[in-house]
Length: 380
Image 1 (cartoon, one colour):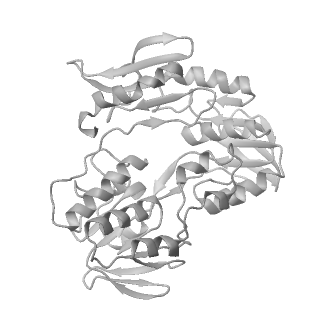
Image 2: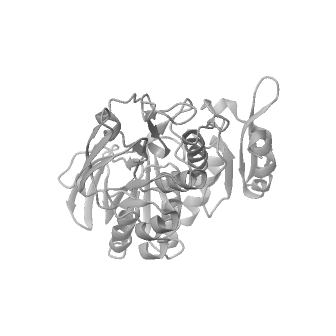
Image 3: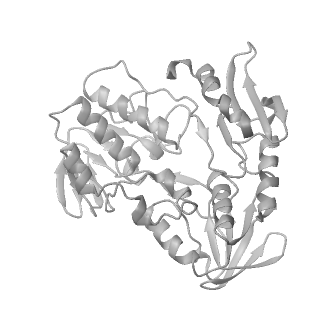
């Protein structure tokens, strides 16, 4: 039984069906289970694609293709781990092995004000549909959070003809991800496009009415805006894991085969935490799905080991590709090897000169694949 119909849920269903053609597989989801590429949410506005344009399959179509059972709009109420029974809003279901693929929820900053609850997030297809409709009615949008999603959305909205203020609590874009020099170049280019970046500032209060909000900033300044988008990150959905008394840190703790503290329960995707933490990227999810399917088949030769994924940002003003060194967030670890205009190559190496990670911008991104093979030679 798989609980959750995001990328992780469908990916593990595919992997299990491939390895175990006779297995009885049931997928339960609280939403409609529509299959769509979640990374496209941050590109859809730029590509002028509607929510319906992003759909690839309905849950029923995908389930038929995989020959599995699917229960949509079905919320899990309780799980009896002794009897291996899941009680839902549409009846009881039994399982031999349970896979939790509940993903993560978008976070909102805790701010005061009469309409703080009207701040929006963008983490799934329904929220994108609402967002797309709302922005047609406003001219100015305030984004809270200068991470990957906030920065990408700022660019997209400017290109869509909107006025944008980007509130960044830290002193650079994508802190903990980009080296300072590349982040500075990116900020310059986005500012030149028209984005008003406010470094070291936060929204403390949100008042006003729908489409006409008054924001109070940490500097004491007031800002008028038509919509406030929170892009400060995600938090793993661990509610089901708590009901099962599984070990939880930030996410549900998993071993090399994606088993939780209960060996009959697995976790995958944005809700799962390996020894390297929560990796909210598609590449680790694909390998987790392979590890789970192989383990269910009785094979131990394909464990999941966290490696730094190859990341390509969707920032149109500056091409950026990087592979972050696992466990290292110190900016001093980055060393510049080449810097020609906006084209930069920074690397992180160990004491024996082995490449641990890299960050490339501009034309340097063409080196990404060859460098990634040096960082992770076993990835092919």
